[in-house]
Length: 288
Figure 1 (tube, rainbow, N blue to C red):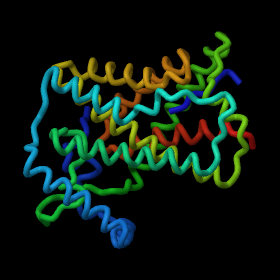
Figure 2 (figure 1 turned 60 degrees about the vertical axis):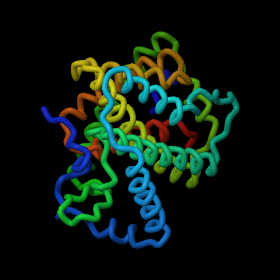
Figure 3 (figure 1 turned 90 degrees about the horizontal axis):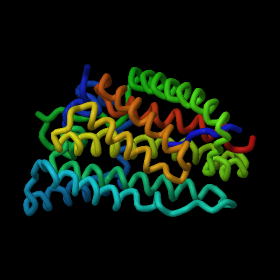
Figure 4 (figure 1 turned 45 degrees about the vertical axis):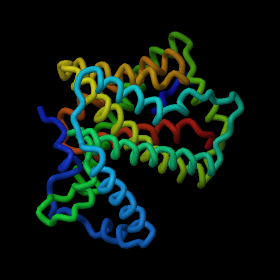
């Protein structure tokens, strides 16, 4: 999540999080899952989950144990957020590839943690890759309505940030991260990398902050809006590299995304909205 400087329905349960319509399972998914490498990765993940599940019984954490799990998971998954970005850092094609790979690893880790500890808002492996034909499969790709709703969410976030940017300009705030990125030219490799990075960030951050973290605070018996606020604050603090102004805007956007999530049945919509917003900011930042 990046921010420019001066220059009611709950999510579906885990087994139906992406969508509850099995008939909407589209042919692109079948083509992707037919790739041998993808089949091997899916088989290994499913094998790991199945065998480990025999030893480690799934359980629902409550109270302080839920908070401890949140803290440990946060440190493991987002540890690189605390690595400072150099003032003259460059963002070549390989940098985008490494960043995308890290976000994909985060998504897999969150799916594993959600599976072992029975998180309702995180899709299960059984729903993503069911062996039992009676289980409704969760769609891996968004449909047209989810894409449209994602555009609405991303556009709303962008409008909010434009207003915040005007206020920040009066306070002479500049975003150090975007200031560093602005030194790089927008090449075809950077453009494609920005798309992949935005999508991977959208899904990984929404899966953690709007699903995992928010449900973890809910397991502390927090009211829904308090859990949303705590998740938004954690989201804001995670953008410390963008200094105080960036953290304030991130907290505001985190709460806005949570409000959209309460009115959406799909993780796809909120993640795509997040990704669309990030992509717009990136494209406006790099030198044309």
